Length: 217
Image 1 (cartoon, rainbow, N blue to C red):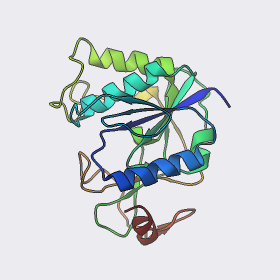
Image 2 (tube, rainbow, N blue to C red; image 1 turned 90 degrees about the vertical axis):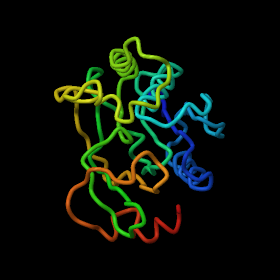
Image 3 (tube, one colour; image 1 turned 60 degrees about the horizontal axis):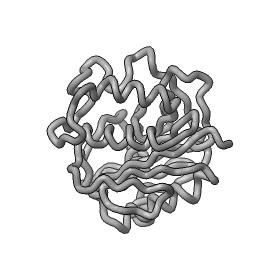
């Protein structure tokens, strides 16, 4: 299918070895979809747009997302982040509407220095959305703000406390058979994130948390 582009964003704060492994997971599983990567340092991934060391923040993360969307030319964009790994099926999902944000609900976190997984509801790291709709929403949130800022770590929630990027009725949910995984390495903006109670030593397709930690970290 040629109706989607992967938009990959990184501030390059993780170790180069780890990011190289997650990029390989991405290219191994995404088929022949085009990739636009917007990063602080050059990376060998698709069409790479380098913004320089502008600082890590939610504001700058969303600005990089906007740049990636504007550089694409497909109907949909599929989010991918440097501290996450994805099953191949994630890249095959397509929304049936252009005015909603579709988020995968089959998500797990590998917590900082732990050998178990924790279940998470949804996140920006696993969503598929109409490109023009995403651009419109991001521009609305940025308004006349400066190009870059390290002040707003939790942007856009700091500006739109009710919902962040999208209002409640602007979301739709889908679920892949196999999970997307986000790593908490201690080098990102946050060492923890919201999750459900419970600890899972292994999950289908990926195997044990200990195995994944050894493979990627």
